[in-house]
Amino acid sequence: MNNHRARGLAALHKSVLALAVFCWFWLALYAWEIVFLMPVIGLPWNYAFVAAVAVFTATFGATEGYDQFLSRNSWGRFAVAAKKANFQLAIIAFFVFAAYFATEVKETSRLFLGFFIGTSWPCLILLNFITPGVLNKLLNPPEKKRLSVILGNGKSLDSMKDWIDQHSSKGFQFAGVFITSREAPSNLTLPVLGHYSLLSDFLSQHDVHQVVVVPDEHIDKWIPLVSDFSHRNGCRVLIYNSLSSYFESSLVFVEESGRQFFSLQNEPLESPFNQMTKRLFDLAFSLPFLVFVFPFFMLLVGVFQRLQSPGPLFFKQERVGMGGRKFVIWKFRSMNYQPKDERERDESKQAQPNDARVFAFGRFMRRFSIDELPQFINVIQGQMSLVGPRPYLAEHDHLFQRDYKAYRVRQFVKPGVTGPAQCRGLRGEFTDPELVRKRIEMDFDYVGSWSFWLDCEIVLRTLRQVVFPPKTAY
Image 1 (cartoon, rainbow, N blue to C red):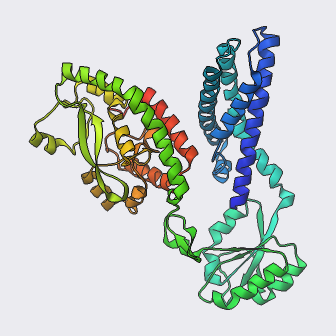
Image 2: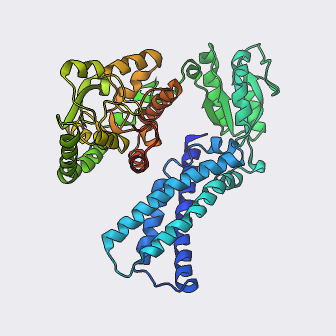
Image 3: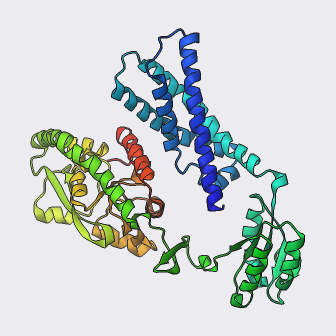
């Protein structure tokens, strides 16, 4: 989908949800006061605005998968809509109750806020379910099909058959193909409209929205003429990137010192501004935690270690970080203290269910991720970030690098205390190669699609995982 159209749909989706939540707040307030005869709340405009901002924030990136969403069956769309609504509701609850505790207006009923948040859930599911289809029908009605022509040699056009079939269902229809050589396509059902030299006459006689160009080895001979024909007749030109077929990942357009290149990886965190934003986000969380909260956990863990498994408070281990550089990670010790030679022998062995090395309170710490809290020290030191791909042992890192292509891409950014896989319950022992592959793919996606809001989402999802840990947390 065209990037501008995708961003436009995303903005419309967010606006619809924000407006709906804002209106629903007043309907819920009316029902609360008139129907249920419950007391009025204070500062209603504040809460209505905060709820709308919350759902707008929660829907960043909500429409990036419109095409995939609309291709699902009804139950599949409902499942995705419910998943999005759950996250959006969590953000609304966080924002609304943060506003409540910030204002401390005595007239405000927490019961009403709970009523509003609870009743918003089915509304969000419904809107997430129907909004993509409604927007698609309004903005891409059958009568608004945009006519396109495609241009290339026979072989290159045959290679585009699947794309043409898919693209035809997304608001485009192809009038036919123009060929740049004597060889005509053999697999396409589209009519051959002639040699590319006839393109100008065809464009002047038909309302063509766009000309799709598929490069071949002789493109330098005909592309200037095709571009001139298209511009003279007010047509958009879309040039297929033929290099993309050689790579699994999407190529990213970049410009360096006035020259244009393709990169194999989008890297938002190459931007100094994004780096500064992420670092400030890390410090805003880590400094208050280490000053006000961490000492309590040090005392608590120290007492239970002294009672159940005397030894050092912290466990330090070498891990692989950004750029493949090694660093020492901090954790609360959750296993029985061992002599140095035994400890080095067992260091790369991952914890298993009912592992005899883990003492009783250590098992509790591991389940609720308390043992990971000292890693905020690594964040302050700049070795780790609050969010990022999790750092692995050098032994595991070497194995993954051997088995998974482009594995080192995940090391383009700092490792995180939590990450995109961990916040979705993919953590613990490496037992299933398929789950390991999913973890690494999620790390790749994170590196290429980082945003401040994505970090916020991962932190909120992680809080849920901490409170309700998965079965793999041991």
